[in-house]
Image: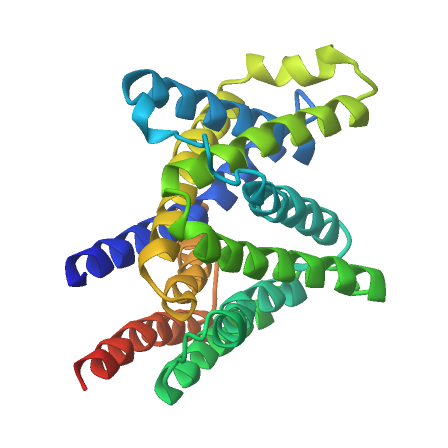
Length: 305
């Protein structure tokens, strides 16, 4: 059990590190000037590639998917929450406001997940785990204060961000709840099946079934690099890692790693995009890491007593 928990912690950490780089590759695709890349076009390609990869894996290991006799429709809720609902809420919210409020709202996902685990799964976190979760949220809030992007947070935007937060927290809860019946691969497979269909349909509707608008980005090398990373790493590996972590860790512990995404995004901006950040932002990054470490460390202490 201890080895599985250690591997789950490693998978949760690596998965959220990859999520942190996904912003960099998404930005690469959206910054193209020769073609227009909308969020739905990018998401369509991202999850079509991810679903294709999952089926290639099945060719070599067909035993990984066995839904016969299982209540597979329960996984539809999982896929609707994440990636479908989460990305729709997030993309529309970010188009209308800056990242300050959005980053803080999404940072509350571990706290909401903690409450869901406490109420519905009877997973009782220690007081120190709760404190460390709050420390991570404070860290994200401090980083967000340094954001100078323009934008106003209307009540409509607040509802969109609330929807994104609840979708992410609900996904972690349902993933944990269904882990006794479905494997990590099965959960991830259904998520990608649903996402690839929904986002492709939305891309077609958005572009009025004009296939040329959807196909044109494939001629750009930067776009191909972006969807390759987002499809292979930020979808297949990262989401599988999160589902695996939700199988072997409590919601408090598995979701605590999600704020590592903010730290990685910050470092990627500084080291790769040469973005400038204050000393306060670096201090906030340390707070996030300390908070995540504390959630894991004090869980071990509790188990040893």
